Amino acid sequence: MDQATRVLIVEDDPDIREATAEYLSSRAFAIDAAENGEEMRAALEKAVPDLVLLDLGLPGEDGLSLASYLRERHDVAIIMVTGAGEVVDRVVGLEVGADDYVAKPFEMRELLARMKSVLRRTRRGSAPEAGIASATGRKTVRIGACTLDLAAYRLLGANGEEIPLTGMEFSLLRAFTEHPNQVLSRDRLLTLTRNREWEPFDRSIDIRIARLRRKVEADPERPALLRTVRGTGYMYVPASTQ
Image (cartoon, rainbow, N blue to C red):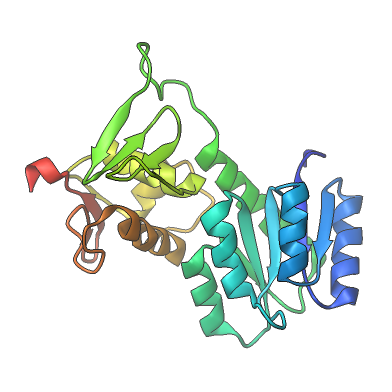
């Protein structure tokens, strides 16, 4: 793993925090640590990490609200660290923007494997690829009232405001716009976004599409652009063909 990979550990248990920091430091990660939301924000002001290990059960401001805070402001990978019985909160954590979760008590080797997997996914989703921009300059695609800027990796709202996107969300939107009016299975979407290590039945695809609907649909509860094809997958229907 590249030595430049920076990890922020947000954990109120000092034993877990220190043991995790020591293990990951020995694997050439750059480590920052915080025990609560206030310290997390202070650490972010100094350096934005590549990945955040975020304890769900923090006292005061909990991991769910901090995950929302991170996702709204930074394109970082997030792994939620949960208690063994917090199944519902794990799902909510994924819905608010976490990329994966690991349950306590966890094996350090499992944690490391999950971190590497998440970093591969997020970096593939956000790394520039040849052929995105046209030879004459910037390429844009309309998605409802929004504009997807394929060269600058940005989604702009109706008034030109930038709407935050994760790398995976950008890759999904690009895949949909390149295959309009086609039913795309979860497996096909994984291939198009180059995230083959995900499982096609992983709820992460559904969760990310739900988040995209809140960003591009006029009515996310009745999606007209990113439609569900029951039992098959999803289909992007451009506004001009509706």
